[in-house]
Image 1 (cartoon, rainbow, N blue to C red):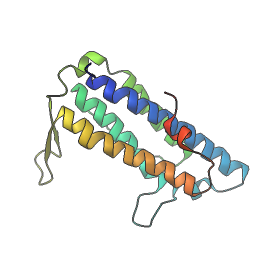
Image 2: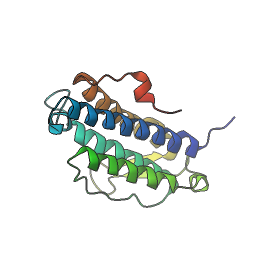
Image 3: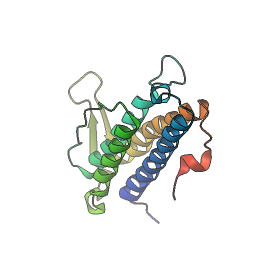
Image 4: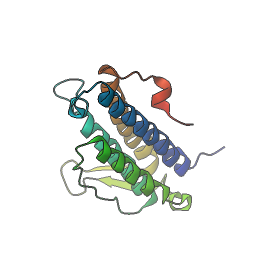
Length: 169
């Protein structure tokens, strides 16, 4: 049985974006119930040299839309990453999920062989076949940032577990 590039990407991204939205809603409620300033969570980091929760969510969304767009061979949407609240992060996730919903599976035909060029024309240029881009770069990057967002919230006292991270499947 062959797994399509669409089914190996979009449903996986949607599942984790959905769980990220749920976890963020729980974090916002947790902060409100305990009268904790939301920025205490939004600016929390696992370590000083790592990005805060806010940026982890933005980057996870950047990778989700980038993976979908590149594999479907459509322009990557540009978002300004200006979110500063839980509400704005929820809107970002919703916008990213809506974009992914609009990608028809037919657009992914041949994506495993499609050349993906990142940072074209720069010293950091990287070239991948679509298969390697998805499995060896895109998904690991996405999962890193989604997992780090989860870990930040868990380390700050939010009672969440593996089932919360996994979301609906």
